[in-house]
Length: 387
Figure 1 (cartoon, helix red, strand yellow):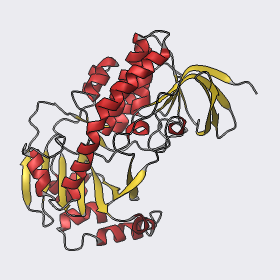
Figure 2 (cartoon, rainbow, N blue to C red; figure 1 turned 120 degrees about the vertical axis):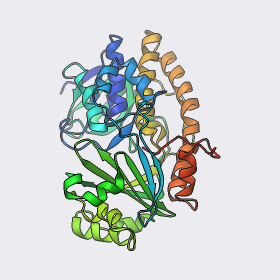
Figure 3 (cartoon, one colour; figure 1 turned 135 degrees about the vertical axis):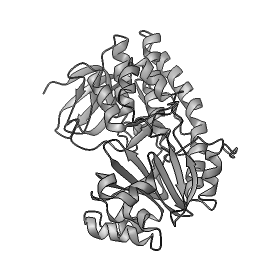
């Protein structure tokens, strides 16, 4: 069997890996992306993202996709409100129309990146089963179908459970004791009027210490709910999420006594609830330079969700591509410069992410989060909102 060699092999067709491939393409540098999913449409791509001026939007500008990005913005979705568990409004912040952090669906954003790449850049159905070093900066990828490829540069853009990360780091993600559970309501204004009114036109936060309900209004009259629970791993493992009705009932029971319009975001869910246990890498995760391989996005700096993850991943991809283009044939110089900047850039975000989670589910919830929205200085300098 012939093994194909790829000068640049990117594992993972998420936002970070695709941004890397696109910005390389803008600079005339070919790359291939290997993705486990069988196709671009094989699964949903998650919810709505707020795209920040100083990283996500800069990366899209480097990719030449600003106009395409502007075309998929969900207008008005920057509005946010905070309710108490009885449905009382505690904080209301309308969309100011400045679009400093416009909201887009992750799937739409991924779509414009995919459409911007040459055909066959992304190879679908290529799930990595093993990676090994061949020396001299070359690596071999083995896929679950038994085929192999080699690389001149290998980039792990493959998320929390990266197959590439062990080449440079022995760090593994740890569960932080919090799980988000996704549910959806469709045709919300007609079928779920009370819940839709509670959520409003943007994001809604109903939080207490240890548990909360967060919902976003997405394009197409969809309400996407993230139930947040601080629970041990064995509690989550005790719920059979393949049994939608039983899982929904078990999660909803944690919110007995809450306002009916808030509980309806769980009980009226029209999709099987999906549990996403939140993991993190060690704060300030970094590694020693390893020839011919590097990481970006969650593979490099997995942290609790704070609205920064997708933005950082895209910015990583753009910065890595620009470093490769700037250093010509000196790949190691490019990777050294990229990683030095990456480590310094991302380290402060760990503290922000932990602080945002504490504001949502810690002892001060929800009033610490309201203080953040009102611009009250926080200990770690947290970001404006959770996305």
